[in-house]
Each structure stands twice: as C-alpha cells, then as structure tokens.
Image (cartoon, helix red, strand yellow):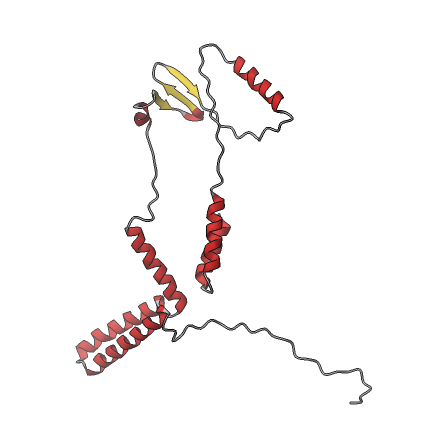
Length: 211
C-alpha cells in the first residue's frame, strides 16, 4: 500500500483484565485446610473400598457419596466455606441467646392493675371503671413555624375552652427518633470491611436497600 494512503492499521482495543483473588493453597484460608482434610478423608475411603469385602464396600461407597455431596454443597469453594462458617457462628450465638428479640404484650386485665382501664374498644375508645369513657386521637402535625405560632396557640386555646366542664383533657407530645440511620451506617461500615466476598456483599446490599 502506498505511503500516501490515509489508511492506517487499526489498533487493537485496550482491555482491562481484572485479576481474581484466588486463595487456593493459602494456609490462612479455612477453605484450604478443609480441602486438605477432604482429600485425606477421600483417600482413606477409597482405600477402605479397595480392601474391604463386598458388603463393606457398599457401606464405604455410601459414606463416600454422602461425604462428596456434603463437601460439594457446603465446602467446594471459598465462598461456600465462608457462608457455612457464618451460618454456624450465627446458629451458635442464637443458641446462646444473642439474637433474642424481646416483645412486650399486655392485656387490658393486666393494665387494669395499674390504671383503671376495663376495655379498649375500636376507633381509640377506652372504657374506664366507674362507667367512664375516653378517646385517644393520634396525630402527626407538621412543625409549627414562628410566623404562625401565635395563631396556632390561639386555635389550641379555643379548642381547650370548648371542652365541657369536668372533662379531663391531656396531650402527650414526643419527638420520634429515626431508627434507620444508625442501622444504615452500620451496614455501610460492614460493607466496607466485607472485602471481595460476593455473597456477603450482596446480602448487605439487599439489607441496605430493603431498609
């Protein structure tokens, strides 16, 4: 081809190859030790199959089949080993009572020992002893700005003044904390420490998105 031609040889595309973290034969890895133990156990089973009588051969074949299935399902890869390890640790801590969620539930009879409530009806109606009734109203008002605070206080005063005589009226106000924020921060911290273990990263991400 002539040197005057505008044609030039195309360059091959630049590819970025990500090196996978292979922990095979890493003696600090639990999967490596389990693999060595599995090889030793497999060699022992094959030896017993070779030297045992026919009836015992079937028994050792069955043991080898069960052992191979357990190893393949739980310990064949580093990710499976880590997942199985986490499940075992969680199971043990659960048996130790570290994952107990305490729930509190009281009936109207139990509450009547402390306050004179006879029955709680639907729509927030509370029946007290002495043939008295009350109603509970739950509201989520917006924050009152300083510009309309005076007008808001006048409306409240008008409401209180409209209540009949000898009628108890009580308001309870509280600020609700946001419980999600510390949990989300905790999950982000765990995600930063999870490393390259994909099942754990996926699990933490799913929990974060669900919350």
